[in-house]
Length: 118
Image (cartoon, rainbow, N blue to C red; front, side, top):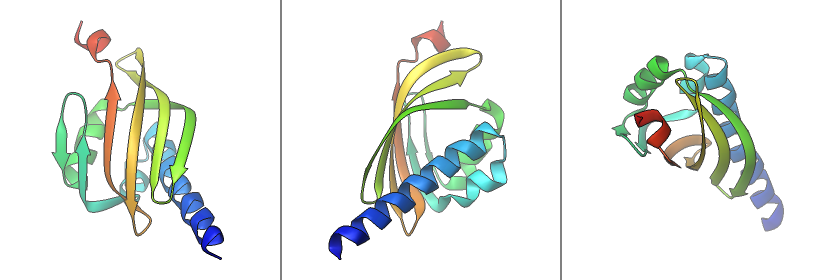
């Protein structure tokens, strides 16, 4: 039974994160926001944000596009490898998402920012 609960948690976590990414790609920012805890903590290469609303305001301006390459799950943690299109430049990156009560509570993103800064 414990194994089934773990599988369900991992499935639900994966769905939440992928729904978030799909909504961002579609520029459906209201749907993306529904996947986030109000007190979201985001840490990235070039910025950090506290609060889902502040983070979403940034995303509305950036209009990033993601192409997921690989996904890993471990209970309420999800890791993605993806290409991120930022201002017409494709960068390989990774995001580590931590969920709580089926909403994204925090995540960290890493990528090489040099092509964007050039």
